[in-house]
Image 1 (spheres, rainbow, N blue to C red):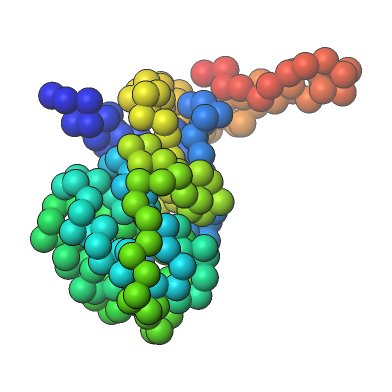
Image 2: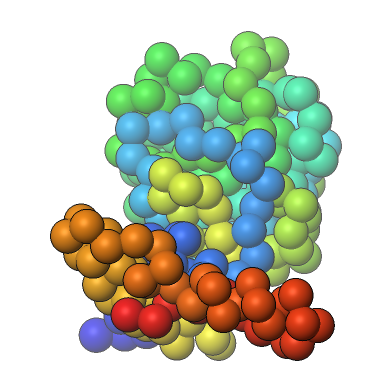
Length: 220
């Protein structure tokens, strides 16, 4: 099993909230980058694209990106559609893992049934021009965070995270421990326990009141 397969297997057991809690290095995209497709879970290396109000770069990227990668499109957040049904179908045909657009998409009637994860900032009908070839493989900004080609993109119903490839597997594995602790807390609460039974709530508040360093943490 290669590193990406190991990462996908590890992520299948957790969610983005646990990954975010497992360490501070996970970069969370803006909540404005929202799912538009039937499938939302995503775990894939980024293939970055930069374009402004023009679809040509995205069309080229669908054909150029390696199978298994996710297109991360820096469209400057502008209200113009840079992807839609045809590009999503083309991405599926080439085995891409998803499309994330800091800009607009259209054809959501199809996208709502589409097995390819598609995220965007806007939904609107007007597409961009098709004259600018754009740029591939450059550092981009998407959803307010910097993304480089090869970074790992994780997504689910909670949102989109970006991790450095070198630390991604360790971070996702650490998220499994977070989920295990949360499961113990859920079981305790379901049995009639309180938050104070699960967290160092009283001690944490007292430490803060006394000007002492403290962190809210689980005690289960």
